[in-house]
Figure 1 (cartoon, rainbow, N blue to C red):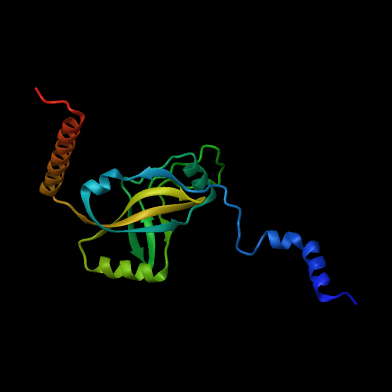
Figure 2: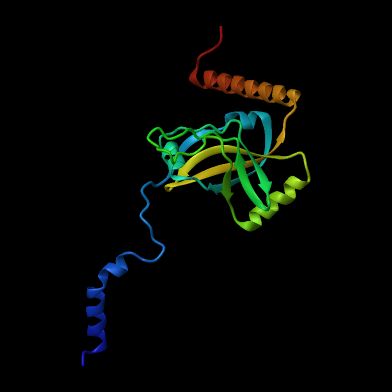
Length: 186
């Protein structure tokens, strides 16, 4: 009969490969955030009220096309359909090396979020006047993610006011930088 401490040491050595890979641990090829596409006009056209990060359900050729850095989310929007969030009008071009199994560039793609978050968004959208707009599309630790924003459309005069404010802020920072560097205006 082998004493218990020695038996556990022998079993650990024998089954060491099981300890090295625990359940749920996966090899992550990429660490960090890699930006693929950005919707700069969304911040210009909408008042952004809230932002969420959600996953996106893609096919294999779509992922390969995104890894090549090719996508456009400028015309994109999200909508509720039977209690699920769907991303529409986002263009992911066909993968050049793809075969007959390639995807269609502008198909609807399902967004992955927790049910509570989806219900919260559905309640807000039902009030009306708000739109779900994608702000950016990126890889986070090897998984494709979409930054989705709840926005209210701006009027033309709101856009002009924002541009005036930005220009005034630029002028102030220029004046401050000139003053601190010692350069005077002529």
